[in-house]
Image (cartoon, rainbow, N blue to C red):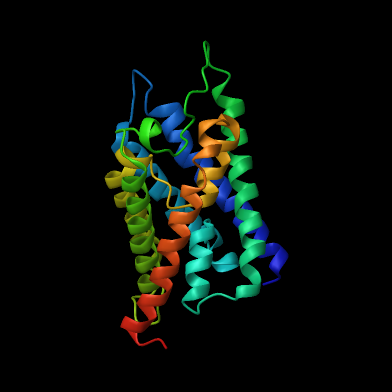
Amino acid sequence: MPLGKRVTAEFFGTLWLVFGGCGSAVLAAAFPKVGIGLLGVALAFGLTVLTMAYAIGGISGCHLNPAVSLGLAVGGRFAWKDVLPYWVGQVLGAIAGAGLLFIIAKGAPGFELGGFASNGFADHSPGNYSMMAALVMEVAMTFFFLFVILGSTSDKAPAGFAPLAIGLCLTLIHLVSIPITNTSVNPARSTGPALFVGGWAIKQLWLFWVAPLVGAALAGMIYPILSDER
């Protein structure tokens, strides 16, 4: 598949992840009559990955996440030369998804931007968790996310079930870590909303690039050793 088509698929896939996942938090979670709460938001993020895995998995592999692209490259599953183009497509898709969400959200009476589903720590953590707690959580959760991705997409895994495992894993990750950081494990997902919030969200964005990339790289190194892929 030509690189341009794969990157375009990543753009639309990441747009869907941010629009669907962050949209569930911004538009539905706090709605007084049908508020979906933490469980609903966690499920929404998992469903975005699950649905897109079936839609574009055969085109681009459905990474939707710079950390996933890096982890797969470290694990020998993805070409290093394609990492940066994938990152560009993913980040642009995340910004487009956040932009689409912003256009819709501001149509409500008395709209206030607020946190706009941005990721944060300390005063901007939902549970006021420290920077160190946020860093450890994001590294650990991204590590296990990549661990599940590498395992469920290996030749030894049952065919056709990887999207289910990956989508459910992301749901579980959100159930655990929303109170800590609002859950990133994805630098692109963090970048899109942060650009609209500005200020503190931009200042804290570094953590939501560094931690997921570190966690993903560690999984990319460790999983192949355990599975004898190298």
